[in-house]
Length: 236
Image 1 (cartoon, rainbow, N blue to C red):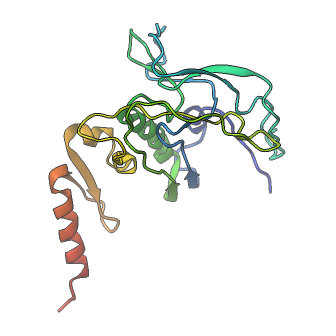
Image 2: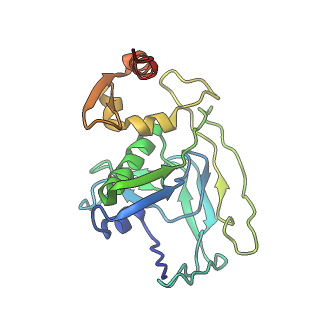
Image 3: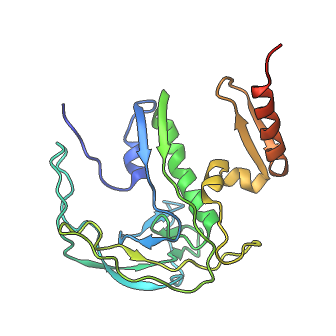
């Protein structure tokens, strides 16, 4: 038995896999606006644009890279060395003034809707590589609305340096009717998807049927209640 470790931008590595080739995917992506892992920023958006980046949003901080050493040699013989260099990261990232692309790390988006958009982008590629009988396990916790105050300091790591780059970040203030310390509903937003939120609908698909139905957000609770009642009604 051999083990191959593919390290890098998950979007790029997923594109290297054949469609319908994966049996099981288990993922625990960064929770929104919780901490900075000290990873180099990625570009989310138009890959063809020359990009002119606007002033960085949020806090700018100098952090050690998470994995400065080599991680894996393709045969499962991986090692994590202590960070040997530092990079400058911004908790809110940067927007391109030409195409509105965003440069930053997943989980550090300035708005929860942008985090949902990026995570849905990843999950579309996950769906492409998943077999028809495959399963996906997505561990995603919720986040609290913040007041815009900063927070947190460095989190110390172990002898291998896995956590040396973790820096807790303060959550930005969240509008749209949410108060400080309100749960934002990140898992539900991801399940519904950015397109569903924009259209005000939820796509419902029963496991025992191929039919899909668009249900208005304001009617989803009543719809699910009726579905549960119908499924649990005793047969005559």
